[in-house]
Image (cartoon, rainbow, N blue to C red; front, side):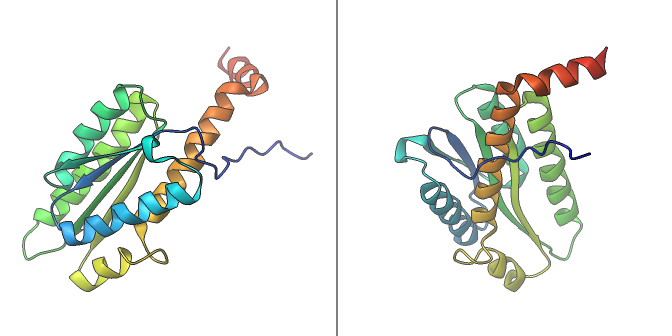
Length: 170
C-alpha cells in the first residue's frame, strides 16, 4: 500500500504573513526579521503581504501573536525573539512561556503560529543562529510558515481529507 502524502508548497504568492518581533536583543531580532522577510520575498510574497508587529520582549510574543491570528487577516504568524541564558532562572521562565504560549496561540486559533525564538546559552550562540541566510532562524521560521500555511490551505480544499477525517470521527 502506498499512502497519499500531503506537503505544503514553498510558495508565498497570495498569502499574508504577520511577523511578531521582540525588541529585546533588537540587534539580533532585527536580523531574524530581515531573514524572515527575505525568505518570504524569495518565495513570492509581496510587500503588502507582510506586516511586522514589535513587542517589548519574547514573553509578550504569545499574546500579540494570538490576537493577530484571531483577526483572520493572516495565513500565518511568525514569532521572532532571542532569549539568552543569564545567571538567574529568568531564562527558563521566559523561554518556556514563549514556547508554550506560541503553541497555544496556534492551537486556539487554527492559524499557523511559528516558533522562531532563538534560545541560547551565550551571545555567540545566539549571534550564530541569527546569521545571514545560512543559519538564520528567522529565515527558517518563515520557510516553515509558508509550508504549513499552504498545507493547511490544501487540507481545507481537499474533500478527500475532510471525508476521511469525518469517517474516523464517527
